[in-house]
Length: 487
Image (cartoon, rainbow, N blue to C red; front, top):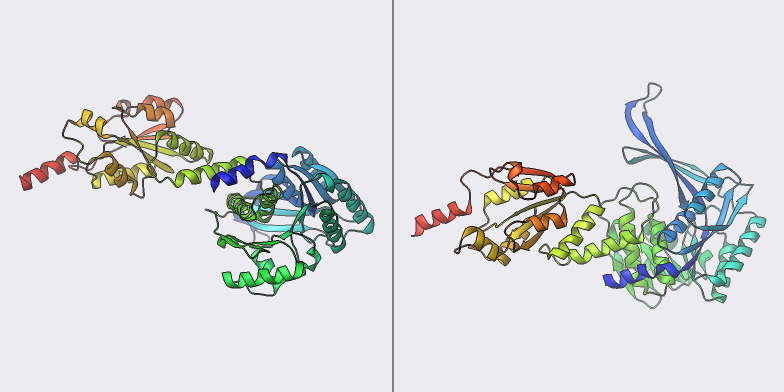
């Protein structure tokens, strides 16, 4: 399946997508709160930095642009400094903003988020929710009519700020149908009859519940809610995003696909819906299976919520995720080329890689304590395991007592061990040169200067750690005790 999803990403460059909707300038104030104000019982934020980002339909356009699509954005901003800043950001991102109009009757929609210690503590909204006036609507419609024949699909990003009125959506639907273009909408409000003529909608669970009038707390009643939505907007598919429960795709042919979440850590859900509709739309417009489109969107959402603030998910991030998934499926015991891929992916995520090596013949408590200590030095512990031939050369013809495959599986069964790789050389120097660990760990009475690979690791800024052995605990001593008791 991963190869199919990667194919979607690799083919996205040729797509032309029109995004119509409410444009938002997102602003962020970052800082720390370390004291209480003497004026009132509130924290005092010491501002460290500020930045602006594209929000709403502009964030959808930004996501599509980051995936390699050519994007035509249609919407309105105020005749103000915020609007100018938003348009500068569009230009910087290579998004076609010819369809972005200036409306002198309303301000640019602006959301200001205050973040302390990476936690959002306040949001300030500046907006006008009135429907755009007839002059603005006519100009938007004229631009849509001009562009729609040359694009692959339309995304309607409705934030309820007045651009996507019922008559604008109706015009888009009729024009898209005339030119056989797919339309996908991220809906707003509780009356989905305004989306008649749209092919696919992507509400979240709360929105689907409000629009259908059905409380969603099981897979059975989410199916009932989707059926109700189909009856109202008469489209081809409903994709319901469900937060920690993943997402569910309902198709008009009766096919239902439930997809579990891919999120590992959730820091901020701002913009997650924009990411979903962008990636799902990209795949659907390219003609791929809708279930695969939803799976890819689910992966993108899992990556996006792991970031703080409105952000985009890149094609490279998703390909890395898919590659990592393929390698995870292989288990903990990897070949050298597979291990190098894992290390590359880990370092892209700024993870600290720890490496140790040994024979680990007759695994005992001393080994386990040593490996736990080694794992504490970073995020990923890799063991270079001597194969049977190299053990014989190092320990003598009667060793190993346990074969290399069994030793590898015993080590892989430990929670503190992430990956195991076999090597046939007498020293792990080749492995160390190849994977470039951040921390090299050795057990015993060595000095750091005596550790094989120390010079390699320290040459690029890595470090060496020595872990003392457990007194009296070794494979040789265990063998000696067995011989004494049973000889």
